[in-house]
Length: 257
Image: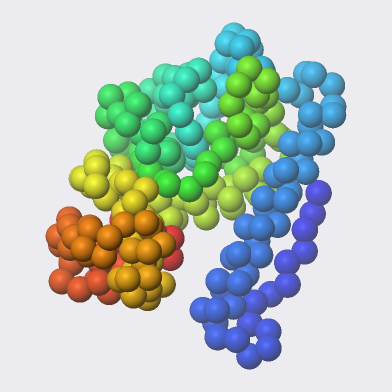
């Protein structure tokens, strides 16, 4: 499966704008490619499927076969505690120090797996946390991958992907989300207030330039309560202005760029 991407910079747009448009187009095409690939593999014979999550032995075997031979790079996305995360974390302890390992977690997965993550060798390991919706995935050496289908429940499937274009698409999608994640140490340093849904909504309105009264009305809180929240957020972010608070929020992954 191949995809053709037009080069950026058309119609006189700036290099930066062209790069952003090119990256967005690439990620969108990567997402579509992943969905079509997973759908294709589901229609093929069952030996292409890694496991149903209820079949622990089969899932474990698929992960061992995929992660065991890793030589250069390993990218992992974990969405929640459970069979997938537990087995991946156990296998990561066997990975050699020469392998560059990137682990991307949701806040829930990071907090549930914190003890295990801290026990992993730190030589070439980096852990980041993302607020974005993730799909559980493992990509090994850019040559093979395992993808868990979206959603939970007993019907969730895991698909082994060996198609080069599909694996590359997975790498691109992972890299895009990774670049917007925050380092685990930064995540752990955030107060619970900064990780709340209300804080995210307030930061979004600050960035959009909404006036305090409009933002308070949108959030169904009093103007006084809204301004108190803003002051507390700025203090938590060690920001002297609302603009600086927005910059810090992007740096910490609380807001997308």
